[in-house]
Length: 239
Image (tube, rainbow, N blue to C red):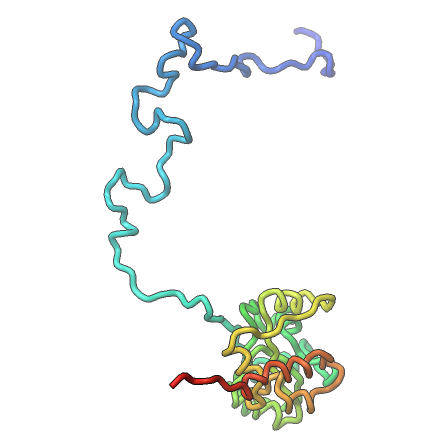
């Protein structure tokens, strides 16, 4: 038997037949790889590029994606809210997984971290299912709230103030960031909704008068005045 050789950097080498010389194509007939250079004769695969048709290409035949009829449309202004019912919040409060105070209300962050919701989507919507079992005063600032939920929460001594979140502001809320100024509603439908006291909207004058100072921002009062100017504006109608 041959003696074992200690492996070191001086005797390392590639395995046998593990390396091959590069095939240098298109260098003339004498090289053996000239002419068509291994690409065969003419056609799409002989041309430059990756030689592959795009996804869904069926050789010139009308692809199946075009043969199927289309119905409906996608509303790009539509929003998907994560629903949360009062009975679920009551259960989480009883387990000690949710806490709130007038100065520190429940937001999308607390609901997500506690597992009360699994995805905030475009915001949280508070619903009134299970209001009969709801008996704890809570303080919450969702994106939207139903009238039955508002009535039940306020009936128990809590409050609901609905706040507008765009995607970046919602992301900051979930991550607990407060170093950036949150967005203001810009679409007319959002401006109308978030300036109505009936919706317990945070930009309504009544909400700003009843909201605790700890959660209220100084700029909201000025924003409320500016956004409500549209009610006083008149336009000349040509006769």
